[in-house]
Each structure stands twice: as structure tokens, then as C-alpha cells.
Length: 413
Image (cartoon, rainbow, N blue to C red; front, side, top):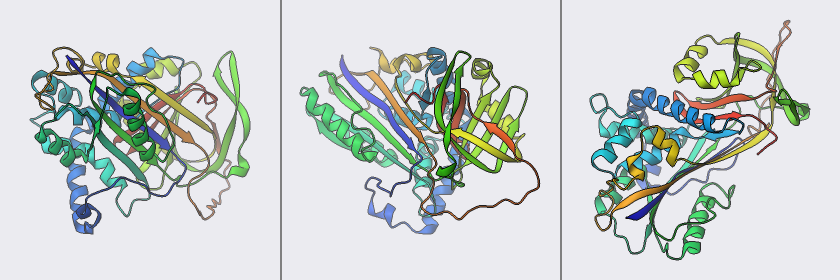
């Protein structure tokens, strides 16, 4: 049994603004008219709304598995990146292996066509790279193929057409060379932020599949660096760490309930960061019972409030081996000897050996190159909200979950 090694995703979310440095696209895509863009967006949006509820459930179940296994760690993942890589892999899977992946990603052939399913995972990347969008989501799908392996042309055509995947020839018998080739690709796609995704690679690898996603956002209302000062973050009842806290007074969507405080901080564009702060001692209870339907219900109770908000500056990074986690979610056969990946190649029998996910989020004051001052004239005193104990976060574009995480200790990267 030969080995298929695939990296489900490498993800970087960075709030600092950079110039656009996306991958190459077909000339027709670059020269597309406004009307054609509008038509694409409309179709993608319709497809996404059909699959979003099921895919949100997948994200919630995956997040729960990770937090249960890592109760004391910072966690940060990109559900849309993981789903995209699995959807791309499904193009080469057959029989039960194929059906298992699609079912757990929320594909229901009676409700959504395969074309709409593919469109759903393309949607965020089209939207963020639209000329009118003030946010950008750089992405890259790549196949690193052993020099001895010949892939089916139908598979190559399929992943290129539906996922704009690039293909590279690799000599995995020279593991250091192959590792450097893949690390170089990742480093280039995310502007050099992570120089080394892989520390080693198995010489028996025949195919390496990777999805890279890099979010660049601008706070709609940036924080003033002059107001940032050091404060206490209460990791637990016995541990307090000093971290810099950003401060801003303004209008925010807020929920103040018995067990949770929730604040929505918008980016420019139709994307926002949601900070969920459980009451002291309630974090595990909230995590155990947190569903997207719960978050949706909480959002329906938002009030616009005048708030003095204190938010810690931090960088969190998570690297996960997902094979066992995916197995618990019902995506198991692709990692077993029973795997049917004959839609990729008929030369050898492949199976998945490793699924790696890495995500990084950097939060600071920066938001845009030039922002006019926003002044709010009010006679009310602001409600003070201090995010100074473990919290849950979610980054969404409409209903698409781009990133999801939990911060236990912002002083630990």
C-alpha cells in the first residue's frame, strides 16, 4: 500500500494589512466584466446557503473534538480550509471513501448538485478577491506528485477547473528536497509569514495535497495604538499573565446574558470577528454545548451598545494532526487500507497517511492605512467590556465560518 500524504490546510489569519499578492489566475478571470462577476457571486451564494448549515455543524463537531482533547491549549482552526481540502480530495475518491467525505461535509444529493457543492467551496475566495471587496483571502491548492506516479488526467482537470489547483513534480525519495519544495510553496503563498510548515516528510509519500489560506482584513474601526496598555489576563483562578490590552470606545453589537458576554467587531466588508466571553468558570460548559444554532440565537438578541472595549493583543498558532479527529467525525476510510482513491491514479493503491492543519492569527490595532476619526456624541456613559479571561472566537463572512478558535492564554503564541 503506497502512501498519500495530504496537508488538509495551512492557514494564516493576519489582521495587518498587506498589498495583494495572490496567485496567478486565468486571463479570462482577471478580465472578467462586472456583470460576469455578479453572475458568479449570485450563483455561488445560492449554492453556499444550501450547504452552510450542514458544514457549520461539521465545524462545530470538529471544534468540540479539538477542545475536548486539548482543554488547556489555545486553539485556532479554519473550517472552510479543512473542508476545501477534503472536498478536493473527494474528486479522486470512489465508492464508500467518496460518499463518506461528502456526507460528513454536508453534501445531500437530493438538495444540492455536485456542481453547487464545488461552487460552495469556491465562493469565499471569489468574494474576497472581487475588485470591490476591501478584504482579501489569498488561497492556493496544490498537488505535489512523485516523479514515478502518473495521475489520471480527469482528476487533474477536475481539481484545476473546480479548485484552481496547481500541480508540481516532486522526488519524495529525496525527502529533504521535497520538504523544502513544499515549504517554499507555502512560504511564498503567505508572504513569508511561516518559513517551515513541514519539519520532515516520509520517503514513501506518493502525493501531497495542500490547501493554503491567508486572510487579510481591516478593522472597520481601528484601535488607537496610543491607548494600548498592559493589563491582567486571568488564565484560571491561580494564573494571571500580563498582556497588552487595546482600548476603544464606540458602538458595537453586544449580548449581555447570564452566562456569556458577546461582542461583534466588524471588518471592512461583510466579515466580522465574534468574541464570546463565558462567565467565570463557565468556559467548559459553554464549549460542551456550543452549536452554530446557539450562536445564531445569541446574535438575534444583539443590541447596539456604546461600549468601552478592552481587547488583548495576541498571536495564537495551532498545528494539528487531524487523522484521529476526522476518524471520530466519520471520515475514516480514506486513512485505512480500504481507501479507494482510484480516481487519482490507477497505478498504485493509495491511502491517506497524514492530515496536517496549521493556523495562525495575529490581532493588533492596525486596520487601514488612513482612517478618518469617528466621533460619537453622547451623554451616556459607555458599558465597559474587558476580554480578560479565556474566550471563544469566530470569524465569519455572512454565514461561512472562515476561522474558529479559543484563547486560554494570549501570552502563549
